[in-house]
Length: 250
Image (cartoon, rainbow, N blue to C red; front, side):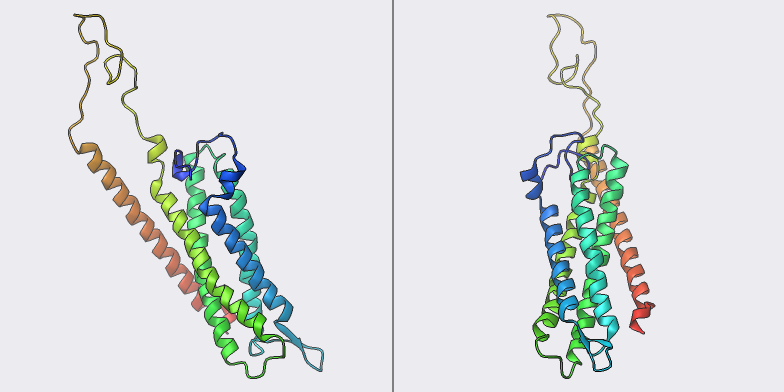
């Protein structure tokens, strides 16, 4: 992954390399999330409903309509989000604004962590409903168990997305936009061209005190880490509070 630009992305305006784009860890994990969402959605949609003698549809998961709707719902949104984030990975290299990249990375981090939590809830919900199912229709067991299994796998896929986004956030804009007080090749700078013999130095070189810049960078990184953790726990607290008051739990 090219980390020469802000937030772990390449320099804006660079040439697009399809092979390098496909090999990016962010793109690979997003494609896995997309595939898992298709499997969960397909398993529940194809075999998750049964029709009784009255013509009414019932969910195979213990006749719990909310269970089927929940599994399909989070998978449909995960499908759309995965495609959107893959497109965002392509546009990420074209973003010249550091603020735009920061907002994208924060959106990626927040959504990925939130959806990992929703898949965890879905895994527990569907597993509990399937355990209470007494007589599932013939030929539906594999699909129902497959949906539960890929809900479990999706947890780790979305956690991986959140982890990569968190790594990007930590990188920040330091690598590409660090202040340069000296220009290489300028008179009086390290590596500059010397003047004629005996001429006075027009611009004496300035030597920074040892460890001053390193300590400052370390302090900034620690502050960014604390702010990121505070933001992450606020998002988790909001998700937990929303899950407690969600109407789908009755």
